[in-house]
Image (tube, rainbow, N blue to C red; front, side, top):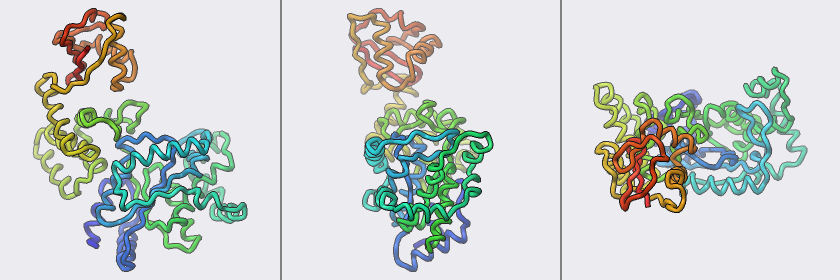
Length: 401
């Protein structure tokens, strides 16, 4: 094992981690035992649609898999029925077994867009938590004090503001920590919002006579607005299941000051190569050129090389040359209805816009062209020609039929 290189890749982009000396000792230990690191990631299957913000942790695991280590993905089908109260001001609604199973299935389809299936083991924590007796639960609860639980910000804030905390919520971090014992984890990853839970895993492993896992905490990445965390509800996200053209286009909207951050957190580019990209930016190279490389790199991670090439060409044609590409999507309009409203309905079906109100505002702002002419009111579209082309913004073209 090249420990120096492993450490460099492991710590790239991290927000916090176990002391380097302990990480090095762990790497030396598994090398001496001639085995890979057992990397644990727990997934709460309550929100199964993954965007590249969620994938930050998955990308880190994939980088370590490429170095020969193995991932153990724990689907929290048992803990998911409680729900992690992290960041919540009230008790979360419990999921049914059927909801958890359906969400877990969707999760599996998406995580293998990133992880190497040959180096990944998937387990459900009901395998061990569901078999615990009440005595086992009592024994586990002895491992942590109420005072320690109240160190968690969300619990502390709710307690101080007289908001209710159900007893079962205290068991979530204990159960997630016990997962580390069950799989003998060497390393656990998570977002910074999981700090309390993951550190609890270290403590519980010690109580069960295991060597404590090392930890990596990945930052919560900002979305396309450059301010708020990436979120589907805010519309500032890049979904891992989006088509190549949309993905490429969205990455090109990343603010210039986040280019390096996206390279660090959303790609597998080696830290040495990222340093060279930083130098190019500092030397005054046009950020747009480097962002094109970022868009291509991210798109190729989730699509084929050819699809990434096509998406790049599509973007250049649509945004740089301001021409309608040959492969533009087609919107079918029912000409027997009010044409303007039918166009509005069709645009909404593309999924690129949050509401009809947003589309109407784009018209009013002069961001829409119909057959090359600016249209400020959708109601002004009263007829369709044989080759009707609608352009929204700089690069969204649609053929209306």
